[in-house]
Image (cartoon, rainbow, N blue to C red):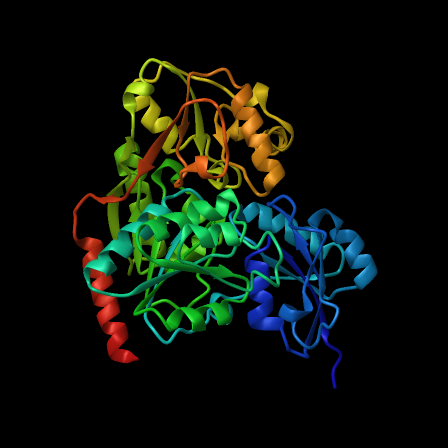
Length: 445
């Protein structure tokens, strides 16, 4: 027998685990010596448990901070580093490759097909060029199309396994009580609650083979709700990719967003109502160049403020979706758009009042300064978010997260919610694509 190839998987508690499960688990040709972790606070210094790692790893696999990569190489002598996380520039990938190559490691990116699991029912995948492009509202829009077709829809969400990995192997969310039972973070609730509100079951977790087999039992169609700008975990009958004209050009400089852009059956250019025409046309030109077979659809992202009279003329603190402002690199989102539209008096900068982990977030992501990212990866960070809000001198708080954030934090200041949806510039195009794809998939299965 040949000596197993020693592997270190570079990740961020999501794609890394999926790559391991689909390519390396129970494969005697490889020995995974460690996972590294970055991007998300508190996901390192753990063990990928034996119950998930399989028979070749009775003690599990250590998860260590990415900054310790050089020490891992010296200690474990891996042969190859497999890059397994998302929403980074191609330049960043090149630097990581150089860091590994300089230590004698091969550097690999797995092909999409190697990690895509096949489903017994049709799959529609929603992914994006960048975090914050508008996957959530597009997923809600597509789910309503499927509901109108009389289909039983189950949404499967990209992983966010920040807690006990063994307990999170396969999670089913049908009610708010399920969210409490699984002790979901703000980030998880932002993705799960809108599906529950729409009457759909959501699955997520760590083992996506187990998840798809469970979901298939109660679904006519699986809706893959992607995270960041990652690739789908499932082979898709229709792959819809969201492009953001507020970040035109990113479709060819971010990984794996460019791969999604090139693979897409349909490219939705979102936020056309707040973008420049030349930026919209730049993405259309990029699509013609990189993926000429894709159907390109323009869409708006209208925002609504539930109580505009409480915002007009006032000093307001705006809370935006956390990942959009962090690794999504945006400096504002729907909350700022809505605030300005209804005549806010002043947008109050919370940066000087930020507490502990929130202050650390600004230090790591200075583009977020001026707006409050809805960071809540654990009880302590939620407490830091509460204290930051309370310390910021404002009349009203505008929450533009997809959830009622008051369910998970308590503040004394009045809070107004902002909602955002998808609206096709030419209605009916997405419905046509969805129906055709589902009909074709049913015929071929």
